[in-house]
Amino acid sequence: MARINHFRSTWGRILSRCLCLCQESLPCTLRPVLVSLTIVVLQKQAGAEKQKIVSEFNQLRQLIEEQEQLLLAQLGELEGCVNMQKEKGTKLSEEISNLNELIGEMEAKCQQPASEFLQDIRTTLSRCDKGEIPRPVPISPELERRLQDFSQITCALMETVKMFKDTVPSALEKRSRGPSQPYTKGRLSSGLS
Image (tube, rainbow, N blue to C red; front, top):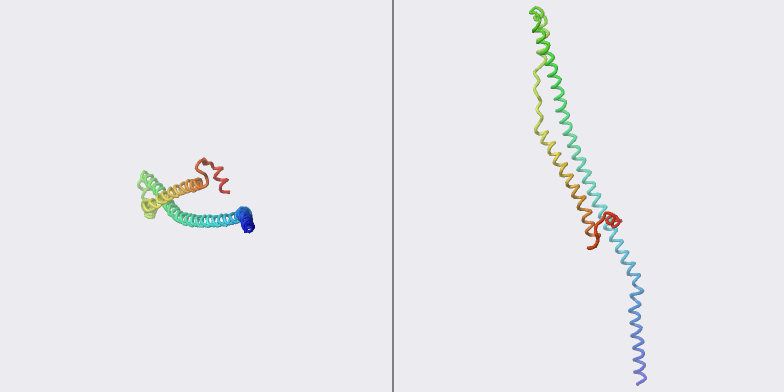
């Protein structure tokens, strides 16, 4: 019986030692597999995040392009209205110039002797009848208001772009650097690649 007990204790120690070795060696042999699996999972997560970022920026790009086209179309209409006002102003200037010329001729004819003046009066009066007194074309307050609205939209757009430029790098900086690492653009750029 002593022999059996000795055998059991020896065998138990050997078996226990084998189990310890197995437990110690098992994680060692599985460690590369676990590292590989972890890398695969991280790569898939990074790929999914990349797809999300690409998708979000594509949506943002599409939204910006649509808004740009809308604003440019509206601004084009506004420019058309401004050009019409300009044309009306040019036409008014021409009419005023023609009337000034006619007034000058009338003043010159008034200086002529009465017989000459009366001979040309019919042609002069017919020219006066054709020329209506031009009325100034006021600039539409609506046109001015719309142009001011576009100025405000442009200012808001510039502020939004500035906030975006400030926010995105700042958020990336907070996530990519440790508590004791200072921010540098080189760090941020290298952290993104």
